[in-house]
Length: 486
Image (cartoon, rainbow, N blue to C red; front, top):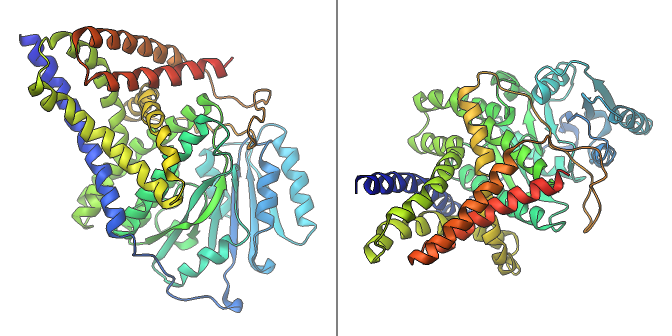
């Protein structure tokens, strides 16, 4: 009896904490609708003669498949050539160097001010490259693009006028997806990112809360970067770190969901997991670094609470992993499963987590495609399963952020330059590193397959859909990781 009470109490505690984060997600949906009509407008407009000088920074590291595509797109940006500068910040150690040098020479011959800057010492990784480039840049404003992006020709005309307000420090635009329909994995990634960019960013920005620059597809006022202390590499998410420091200094940010810069989604599960690992570890590092300062600052209570949930959101993954380990013991000790147990134990899981996730992603897709959004409903179970399947990978990220003192190596996400359906990427050279985590994920999939059988024999019918999500999530992530790493 004592063991049953302990297990159920621990299970409920984890479940309710996860439900709290689910409630916060629902709050963002509410804030989105409440402030949806607060569309930002520029304070004024620069005349042709007043257009400022802009530096475009392109941090690269071993990007041979996408570098030319990026440079061609940036060279086509519409802006007066005497006030336009491109910095190719290439730390590459492979053929990317020659590819970039040849393309830079080709673009320079057209009269564009473009410079190839190569570091043999990758100190600071991406943050170090950006900081190094700023030391020789001439722009009043700095537009940053990662290698896998395709900026539109009008990107500066759509963003720069917001800087007529001297308080604006950064303008971020929404990410699009050139290979959304490449595979189920890219479709699910697109849904996840759409939720972040359509709902989270819009709700935070238009309700007056802090939000972050996403490391790419955004333009900074140079003085805001300097005033906030410049780029720092003591976390793996230098973009989030600088964003919070700048907003604490009083700079305002603008988010433009209707301005889109397309990008390539990772087509390989291990690359996707590597990207998610870096983002999760970096956000917890920023929480450790800045959250005490934010909570002690004189910003509003709403801003502090949103910063808390934003920066600590990845703590949900260790909780989810703990919940997954408690599910089977909980089933074994719960010999009774009447309506009382369903109401107290099973329904909070449904309403606190599942419905909040579903409403979050449905809302984002309705805003992007008002007519076609019902087609994405069939992908919702896989979205939720993928989030579950990532929890081992992400828990490792959180643990490292909490207990390893160094920031760690900035591991780039491999890009293959693929976008067309069925286009091959497997013969290309870039791969995420192999770990034993996929084997652990497959073990958890088998664990939940057993739990499903026991639930069926025990009559725990309400629990079975959630057990199936866990089984599917760990199986999908683990098996695909193993298959694609071959």
